[in-house]
Structures are given as structure tokens and as C-alpha cells.
Length: 239
Image (tube, rainbow, N blue to C red; front, side, top):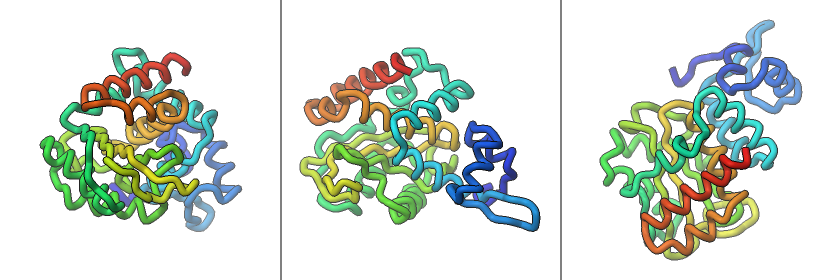
């Protein structure tokens, strides 16, 4: 349930960390929680939003630690199981979006998935993504944004997917360094562990490989997908 409360032990299992890790975050005020008498509880929606925001701002080392933990439990990191390349379909890649505003980019990315026949309710997904962006922008330095819903929801789409769009001109999207953005991912996963794993891997791909340049130089969807596959292979090789 979206608003389900979790105990310390349940949250540790949910985030693939240890209970002492969670206790440390509570002591430092580094995670949203509530006290109910002597108990500390965590609300699922608050944790989902906190976790995705934390990943986008993580250092390379912290991303690798989280990625290893989540991968070991849920994913095969062999070349044949490159999760990003698997989730990005050719019909979910747009190479010349004409969007000029933040709002039109969000609508455009959802339209890509809608035209590919992936969405059950585009309007609900739009509301969730807009809600996530109001927390803080998903744009990161380098001209990339990692759009995603505030909380994963199996009712948004028939399956987990990642869409990719490139605008013909860079637009202000709220990156912390003040740079503009022209490459947009839409990450829509049906459950939280996969959602956070994909965000972590994408962050490593854009930071640790030549992916950004290759996506800008790619002439079509096939070339962009090949660039994603190469970058993901490089990341997996160095884990």
C-alpha cells in the first residue's frame, strides 16, 4: 500500500541496508520518520521520494555501494542482463523533441511511452512526475534529467520501462549547477528495488562513461540504444 508504515527492520530490508545503517540515519535526522511512543516508523511514500532524491545526489562511491547491494539481491550483472538496455525499447527513444519548456518536456516524455502502448493511465503518471519534480529537479550536471514518478506504481504501465528523449535545443530544467538540459530519461518501474537500481545505474553510466557525448552525436534511435548498451557494459565491467 502507498501509505504503509514500515518498522526499522522492514525499512532496512526494503533499502537493502542493515538496521544499524537505518538507526544512524534516524539519529542524524537524515531520513523521514515518525515517532509513535517508543517506536520509530517510516511511511512508504516519504521513503520512496527520499531514496530517489538521495541517489541523484550521491557520490560515485555511494552509488557503487548501493548498486552492488541491490544488484546482488535482484539482478544478474552479466552482459546478457544489462537492465537499462533491456528496459529501453527502440520505440521509446525520440531523437529530435521540439519541446522548449520544462512542462512540455514532461508531457512529451509521457507521450513517447503512451504512443508505444505502455501506459495504463498517462494522466496519473503525469501527476506523479510533476509531484516528484516539485520536490526538487531531477536534472543533474551534464545536461541530463532522470524523470520518474514520486513512487513506483504497477498501475502506471503494463511493464517497467525506460524512455529516452533528446531535445533539439537545451532548456533550463533546474540542474544544481545552472546548466541547461537536452537529454531526458523517463524511468517507470513497477517496484521500488528495480526503480532505485535503474536510477543508480543510469547515474553511473552518465558520470563514468562517454554516454552523454555519444547520445548527443547519435543519428537515430538505434545508435542511441547502442550507446546505452556500451555504457552499461562498461559500468558492469568495473563493478
